[in-house]
Image 1 (tube, rainbow, N blue to C red):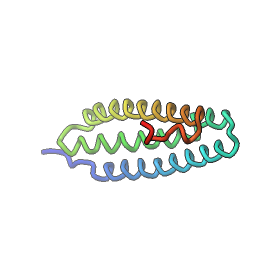
Image 2: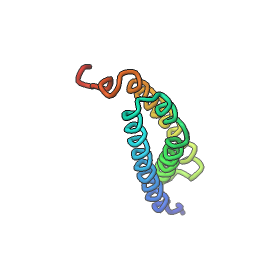
Image 3: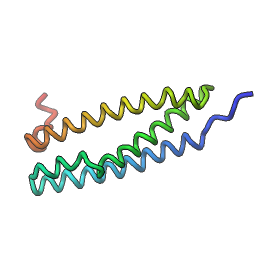
Image 4: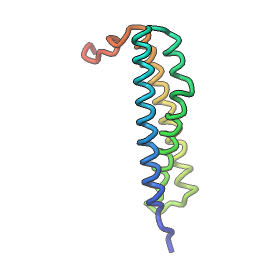
Length: 120
């Protein structure tokens, strides 16, 4: 009567998001370390390029598949699940990307001491 939920897609989306997140973290750390050595604004400006956008897109796609598969566990069809998971992923991704750009701007303006959370 009801189709089997996509457990394999749930696991695949989760693993894709984790793998892309590791690549994103590694490239972000390397870029910030290179900027810290040179203190060049060109390096931080290039952080918004494909070096970070590709792994971030992988994270978003993995999260979208994971969310849609999780929604399908509750009996929704695939179309409805992706119609709900897609906008949630895009909105979250845009908010996270804008926050990352803001944090990189703070680092560029005041160095790593600009992110001192104890001063707030």
